[in-house]
Length: 485
Ligand code: NDP
Image (cartoon, rainbow, N blue to C red; front, side, top):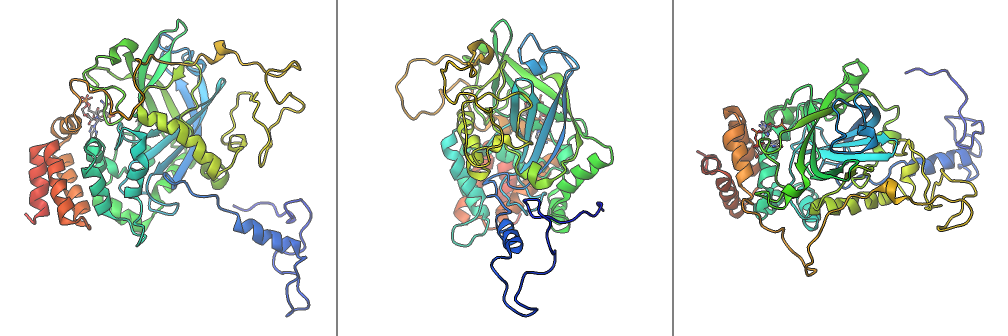
């Protein structure tokens, strides 16, 4: 893009003397230290990068809006959901999980689908994935899981053996690994995949009634995936293919759209549902809780600057506005701490003041100062309570959404077992009842190709057992093909 030529300046706005030549003693002499312009240019360059995200490093983003299409006031009093036709601006960031900043978009991996809605009650963030479940159900296993997907400490190489070792020792991963190894592990574009809250959250209506809910953003473009071979070829041909696709689609007026469907469970039903409805490795069958379409989300504007907007975007599942809330999902509890903490490390104390992260609602907080403070309230008192007109918290407005807990000993527990809790039943249903013959065939060849790339014989034996637990036919096919059949 050609811009009108204006004079270069320093970052202090002073005209710069040259874009080409350092200040030297004669044409061949040494460069002088007081060439502050070039020295500061070097210093700024050295600080151009912030630490990349430990997970979801490679991402792409776009702006758009969310629009309510059904009356949901019977379930929630959230202001941004208060009337049909109401629109809320959004920013969405899609990503892979394990790869670094420059890694190929088409690697087999779950995809992040993080949504920030700039509501009148502050930011509402849903940090979704393109899969409805996750590999583990307790936050204490998350770091180990991610280490197993990243690189070996000695060689710096990724290692499929490490991945299968972790998965086969963690049977709760079977549902998510089934989806990951299916063609849904290699979406065709970011536009052709769904986004799921995966976690159970909660809603509360104006009468104080509570509901457990799951959010499903369903692609209007239709789910489309790459085969393993297509994904591997594209990784070499165009590692940025998904970023390019999203940008080009929006720039050419083909704004992608998603339907928001909700699953809604009356609050009291969780206690004796046949499996634990807060377990992140399980979906709620549609038959039990049919999805209800309540809105649509459209992405129709590209960011103007990749680093300022997409790289510095920071999402936080604890950003929940009145009328919406958490659930006792133990992974969600871990994420509530983790996201804000990682942004403090990665971007800095005041990351929420950056334009892409800043709420459009007024901020009246007693937090103050820190590097790069931009927003402030002038002479507002810096402590509460005060007698000089500072803001006063209003519990009525906040209306935190809680749930009861039975008196119990503090300890390290698995979830209470419900009658039908089983790590393999849902992946079995997916394999047996939902997948087509082609889906099953690709699942098997994708597993075998992944395991054949470096998984040790003892772990391979566990891989066969793992898939046999999902379905005996699946175990038999994997075994046969791994053994050259
Ligand atoms: P349903 O038959 O009502 O739903 C099956 C759902 O599976 C579909 O609606 C679709 O959800 C999704 N799906 C279709 N093809 C594939 C595929 N190749 N790979 C992954 N998912 C696919 O049955 P249930 O609700 O009883 O669920 C049965 C199984 O389906 C579950 O155990 C789970 O593995 C899987 N599933 C269920 C979801 C749920 O929320 N109930 C969501 C996604 C998968 P979508 O429209 O969301 O793509």
